[in-house]
Length: 276
Image (cartoon, rainbow, N blue to C red; front, side, top):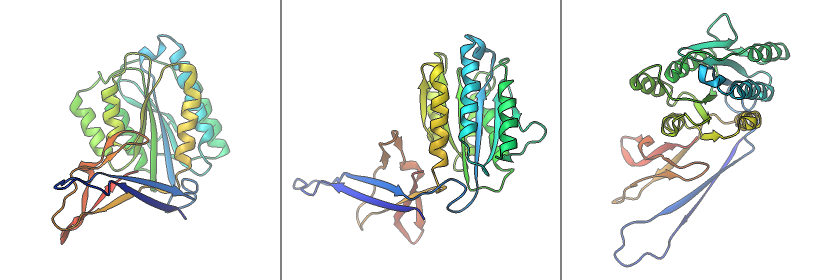
């Protein structure tokens, strides 16, 4: 069973007449177990690989993407539902191939998926919204409580309008988590950051394609170590006080203020905020 602890640090010596109190809350979790095997339900993983034409220039990017996907598949725990999505001007399933549904990881499906990933080639454009939409459909095909994916791209969302991407992100918000990675020099940091922020994930650059394999393996290992699907921080403000903002500072900077929900209409002083 997961054990959560919270420690609060604040300035106990306010100046006379001061009205603001800044508190630092440290939340830790131990004994979380393994995703899908401890806690409240099954887990699912999706690997989304950008296979647009630009990934072939230089060809080291698409080769590194295949290696990263293979490393990710090797780290997915048996019994986890999974799929591999290839992203171009539209989203396609690399594995499984013949139905929009996920399969459980076994020795056989792992080998089949590794073989499928080895044949991914680069062509076409970039339409990230369609990639996320397919991931959403796949996650809904399995009865799971933990949903996480990796999204890799080397470019910007040029194959569809910003509204399409925004709608896809909104549909996925609160449903699955997404860690975003950019490779090369043509991807847009703000674009991937907006996706990762909305989907409670991380965003980072893979400066050297040779680092992709280890980065993908690390992300999946981290996801597989989460035996808890989600966590919420409950905040209480005394009568006459209000919480002005809540910001996460680690492992990444994130404004949690707009995610607050009132626990009870009868007592708006108590609010929840999703932190993972």
